[in-house]
Length: 328
Ligand code: MRU
Image: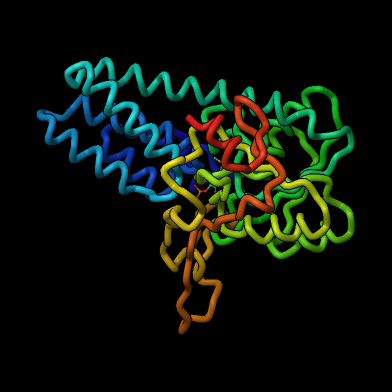
């Protein structure tokens, strides 16, 4: 997997040789983004089946993988699929590995279709605002929120992207901006607080974000800072789309209040990591040494602020009837 903690400064591949390696990579965000986490978790489950000596060990690994990050539904979906397929085949390593590959390949196809369905929403000359990173780094190929943008560019449309910086970990400033630079898509990184300014000035035509989990009523968990963009977009009449594969929908969660929200280490806020001019990665304190921080990694956007959810099957309204039809 790509070591995302080093981007955009250095491109390195991290080889996760064991289930434990893969779990650590998910926890420390070497791999991140709901789709990529799901695919990694699928392979972690397959790794566990390949090396475990007993069903009890496999069960233990299954729980360990599921405890790595709590919010992204794709992780739980992928682990359960691989576990079930392997169990049905008498905990066959081959069956587990094949199911993990099937999940990864299906994700490529889901991203492609999300691109196809979402692209017509982007008119020639459009300005799109996105939050966090929901591009190909967050998936296996294509991505979700950025898939329509890539396709619009491929089809010759002019598109400009406002990439929210996305503090504290800077997925927008580091990862989305890196993806867009590589694709030659005109863009600017903006401070997390600047979205309302640009929206109030009529500079944003639509907002597209990804999702970590979508509840049965359409409430959507995504990176912290998504909620305020949705409220502001609604205030200024700007369409706000969520792009995600249908398996990001968790019908077991009635509404957003039931979605578990990950709390991450306060150091992510108190310190920042970057690269010095000498090419060394360096962590520096950027806050008052006597202060503490609180770091929820996600927030929940109520369905009423969401114009539509772009899935691989259809663009649906964030309404329970539609969600039920498309889930799974
Ligand atoms: O904490 P991260 O970087 O894994 O969070 C990622 C996001 O919130 C993305 O917007 C989300 O996963 C949707 S794109 C797969």
